[in-house]
Image (cartoon, rainbow, N blue to C red):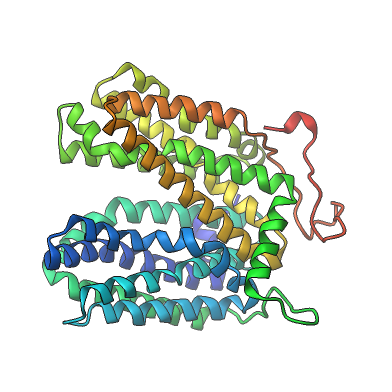
Amino acid sequence: MPTYRELFAYREFRYLYGGQVLSYLGDQVAAVAVAVLVFDRTESALLSAVAYASSWLPGVLGGPILSTYADRLPRRAVLIGCDLARAGLIALVAVPGVPLWSAIVLLYLAHLFSPPFVAARAAIMPEVLPGEAYITGNGLGNITHQLSQLLGFVAGGVVVAAIGPVWSLIGNAATFALSAALIALGVARRPAALVADGVPQRLLAQSREGIRYILADPWLRTCLALVWVASGFAFAPEAIAYPYAISLGGGPVQAGLLLAAPSVGFLLGALALTRVLTPGTRDRLLRPAAVLSTAALVPVLAHPRLPVVLVLLAVAGAGASFVVPLNAIFVRRVAPEFRGRAMGVAVSGLLVGQGLGFLAVGAAVQAGLAPATVVGLSGLLGTAAVLTTRFAHRPQFPGNPESRADRNGREPFSASPDTRR
């Protein structure tokens, strides 16, 4: 299996990864800056939440449609265009005197460019990194994202306190501009993956075609179901970290530990699955890891003390890292001309599942259930849901000469009955 160092021998990966790091760092600082900027102007927690939701709501509402552009247009152009658009819109948010409602609208517009950017980057990566190098590279990207979340909010608070929210947002805009420059310099031009045959299709028609493509493939359907279900239950306890910390006799510090523990476990699990284990072992462990991501929460029903809870959350996070290699296998399974739309559907479903999980556990605690009981029940229900999801760990991929393509150019569902999950 390729090492992380070996990935940087691929010139295009170096530039794509550099842009990714810049964007992650800028986004973490901007998340703090937006919360501070809106609350300082309005003293309204609701408006702060509305502004903060701009980072994920556009992906829920527009992901499957906007991600179609990652197939319709050259992906390098999509990456550069989205980065430049976000740079300009975020810079406008930082302009002194901009009305608050205008700033919030600009934030939502800026985040509308995230779905096509994420889809284009995911779709182009298998062309940049071949074979197992792609799975290792996808793992490094996810690890980088987790580290940015662990460290970024702390660093973001320091930066915003030092230079203020306005200059922090300007810095975020600069990271997008630098990312666009790196991609322009280091990523090769490629034609659009989706070539029009006769009369060009409308955007919505192509979006529906992408959804039908996923639904017609049993492996893709069950893969998404496994990821959506496991993530929805495994990460739901994040929404009640603060009331759970209070119930354990703690406060903000303990809440931070409860939020950090799954990320630490996720990092360790991703390292094991993408660097330590062999591909065959890794693939066999995908579903057991998914079960672990929820089953590790069940012992919380016994109301253990904080150290035990942190260990259990870390173990659940390690199990949840199954999504890292599975995401790479998913993208490779999809035919190149559908990869952008497939990622749009995958990300939107993930956001919806996690959002519903957050709402459910919050409502349960509000109704009077103890946070520990809610966390344990989330694990119990999640484990039952994961176990009922049928999943095959080893698909065949487009372009594999040993596999038989169907008449649509897709590979047939390749798992034998005893490998179904």
